[in-house]
Length: 203
Ligand code: GLN
View (spheres, rainbow, N blue to C red):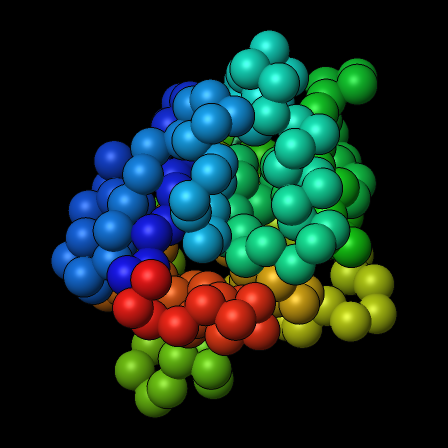
């Protein structure tokens, strides 16, 4: 059985857990280092990246997550979670913690104050024909990508969804509608990683 952890420090973690459970996957709330044992992948939810970063540091999770990510452990960041995974943050606080695993520059609050939140339909080839309803809440964008980063979606020429090896990152909140195709996509990444690491679906 696959078990996916959801970082449960702050932000929209409960909705991710609900999505994973709807897809028949076991879940674990991650707060302490020991919660990182016995999981096959992790979701870093939206919320406030500066707060999540401080909490990761104070719970001593930052270095552990960085080394897991470098070893190929599947990670899925949404909104603030995408910022957390990025190598560089534009408009971050000085010294803001990031895991630096995804070779992109994320720009915080890219849609500014006036349009703090909006929803839109995105065409995402990897998810099939049906457009994906994306909920953007004080959302970041990706302003720069390096080699090896696959762009999964753009909204008005701005990059809003990417994948690089074991890392999936979205500028929006896929857990706030009942279209769980991105969670399914991540579960497939997790299955691939388990296979590579010699785990079958029975253990
Ligand atoms: N603006 C937030 C940040 O900088 C992200 C917002 C969100 O996750 N919905 O962390």
